[in-house]
Length: 166
Image 1: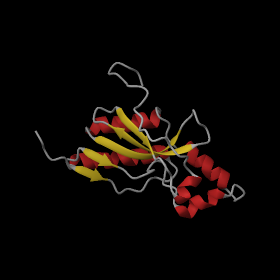
Image 2: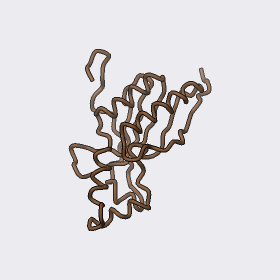
Image 3: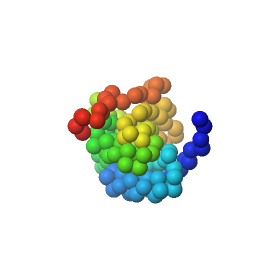
């Protein structure tokens, strides 16, 4: 049986460089979206912790620029590890509101320190991370921030069962 699905594209500003506050802002937005009957909520590219606009990202091109290393370190610190507490919180939000939650994040991969990725996370209404997709080719100034990815989306390496911790 086919039935219509209400989709919401969230137009919110992140709390710049504050991962946890941005996630809580996303939670409020998801709650509002769910009350309006949406079953799929899409949040902006690199919403967590912030999209690196060309205005400030270009300053990172020269490490000699005042504050460039500190700004990159702040971006890396506030990025999302997968799996990790921030990613699990996004799953909780999806489950709480019975939504497919699609969230753009800057990902920090502990296995590849020093490289950040522009990543899209797909959490199902059960709260599970269904898919993680890294942007293949960052464009223009994005290359100053994010590394390139492989062509394959990746399923999460772990699945949480109802009885598993964390």
